[in-house]
Amino acid sequence: MKKIIETKNAPAPIGPYSQAIFIKNTLYTSGQIASHPKTGNLITNNITDETQQVMNNLKAVLAEAKMTFENIVKATIYISNMDDFTTINSVYGSYFNDATAPARETVQVAKLPKNVNVEISVIAIK
Image (cartoon, rainbow, N blue to C red):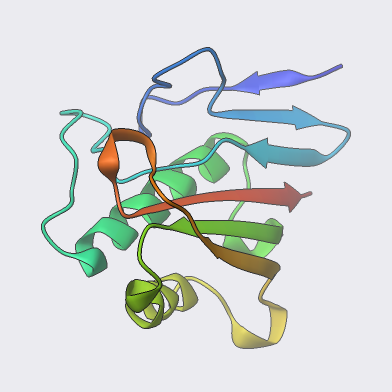
């Protein structure tokens, strides 16, 4: 049976979806953007701060499921400008151990929700 994961420490969904679903020892997160969970304000003043907020939102969802970044086996990064890849990759990489980092793809897209620059979703296993 699936369990809905919901925390006030990450932004509330802006549509008909859950922050994450846990089923059979696997957590599937919805994409996180740089929305501050308490104020709802977008953190888009620079790509470093924006990516850090995305990762902090993911951290909060993982924590609610009693997981950490070490549990992540797959990540998908959507970015609006591939020129930001190096900076996003640097921030993203700071949350992982290189030896156990998850599989991942990074895709440039035409537009993201609320015109943000980066959105990240993950799959984690207990």
